[in-house]
Length: 409
Ligand SMILES: *[C@@H]1O[C@H](CO)[C@@H](O)[C@H](O)[C@H]1NC(C)=O
Image (cartoon, rainbow, N blue to C red; front, side, top):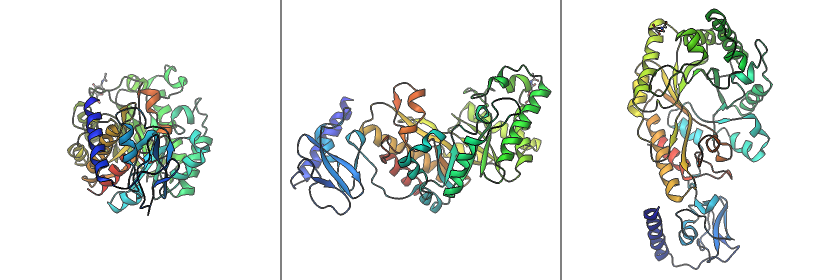
């Protein structure tokens, strides 16, 4: 932290030395497209991004963390907006799906969830299909939401996501058929014999995939089958059916919608290791058995400063004859956010996207919601957050620029 503060202060001094114009007064303009006036604010105020055309000096001092008041006041210019916490924002104005398509990818997308759809500013950004050409339902297609009691299916919430995607002309990733988590207790506590549980899986997958037949680009048919050491996760499916449940689910999905791409999805398979090897071995055995499998979903729940190239690992999957996608990307940090953490996060997003860009059969990237306002991270990892490319005020962070750079690498 001390080194970060020193570095930030030094860069602020360099910047100050290069600025000869006066500082803007409180409530004066300090940035925006075409603005040629002062881009710093008098002491006691902070240059605050309002929209691409206008930044304004508002009373207050810079946020805590490594940025001093001097660095924050000078960090803002027409080109670098200030976002929540007085931190530097993204400079790019491109649209991510458009950029991904221009780079040869099928989509750039975001997860979303039903409770968020009452938030109009959130929905407005999500619905820009040049920004997000694909959406994934965060929860409403899961087992507990779609078959809360045996044989009784409910699609009201799920269909709201379908309607949104259709209205916006966005692709859909189905998520998911078979997962150890968010299962209703009738599944986990039913003490079903193998034949019965196999039939329950077939009914569940064929019904939900069939309900959305023709509506999805792909489906996460099996989610998170492995432990981090590459052994099979001992959930109700594995414990009752051994590994055969995977083929049961894939075959059911295939017969319900022969056109959608069938994926297995997991985390901590981004780089080489026991878990990635286990997933590759599963793909090989499914392929050799003639079981339908089209893709591997690499979730990408990552940590700022701990991201390395995924290219060779993604290529190891595609060499097996499947496509890959980054399906749940977010890159979290220990809070509070600082300018230095945002800068590292930008680098880390760029590393992930450029890894996908380097592999032709890495067909798309989905972020696990686009804004920190609705990120799952703070509730799951105590003290962590800031994982998404948009901050909690729906303003673009430097990570946005990292994504664009990655596709253009
Ligand atoms: C489980 O299936 C694997 C093959 O996927 C097999 O090698 C193993 O023997 C099976 N285990 C049991 C207990 O049947």
